[in-house]
Length: 146
Image 1: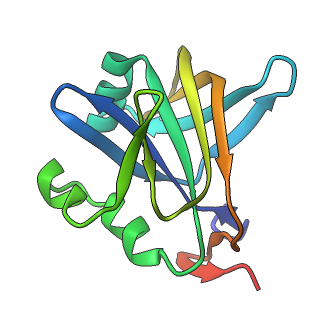
Image 2: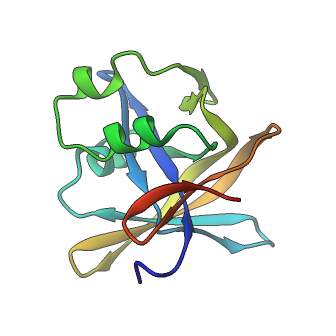
């Protein structure tokens, strides 16, 4: 599947302890009516725990030029280090990254077992977009779309 180009997203959640997030490329729209999203998260992920606690999550589609942010969000390092220097704001109780060209806020709907990952689905509660090309992941590397 590494030969299939995918968009690069950061899944975010907000708890009383602060923001949580991870890089994810197994993200997709699930339904138009009603509008639903899905994302696959590692079963042992701290962000999964935060997402379940918050009952909400954000899908932040990263723009080209933000490979360093994506790589940082893919690391399993202390949360404070992961978020150090990351620009974000709270929107509908969900972190929206400054580097996102698309942000989709979701209310958690389902958590479904899928091997060593879980599939989370969410009802879309907010959308924001701005101009810019997406960051793409292909053959083990971050790349611009063109």
